[in-house]
Image (spheres, rainbow, N blue to C red):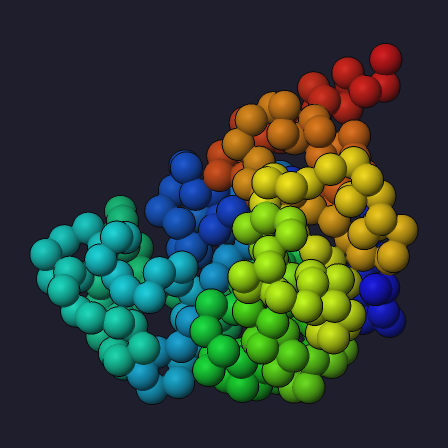
Length: 254
């Protein structure tokens, strides 16, 4: 439900998924800057922990998918590598894996900070506690209820959002998604398209949660989210998505 930590927000927000994922190597400073130059309203990115306790911005548990040269492959989980080793790996166009602090320094828009590992919570919270000026533009998100519970305890003043692949999700959330939202005192619910109905969206929004469907990879998906009153959607190509948003608003205004 809405809490005092919920940022004042209105309208449909285009969210750059890992920056400008389809236009620039994902989760890099350059990708985030490009997305902001294009005009996104928010950025979404993923945080893990290096072996020496540095919160790093990386989606996968390893560098195998995003590293572009042989030296970056076969290194094993990033949780077993110090950050100085991780930083030497080229993840595309000569770019490196940034730290959470570097991303905060390089961005200005609202941020969806997705926590990929529960053991990263304390280090993430420590970064944010030292940067109170950034707290109002951050929402911690996760598929992991335990991560959101920890963030509620560690940084209760920062907004929280639950992510799921579908609704309902009995395997992950046997007591129900609404129960999890209440327990972690979430402000937002980000759901995959499977199971999303007009009635469900209306119920979740009436309970005070911001709602979003993901991913947004077609004009029709963006238009549907706008019509349903979603707070926004994550997009891989923000340049195209900004055009879709203008077109969808014009169509709905007729």
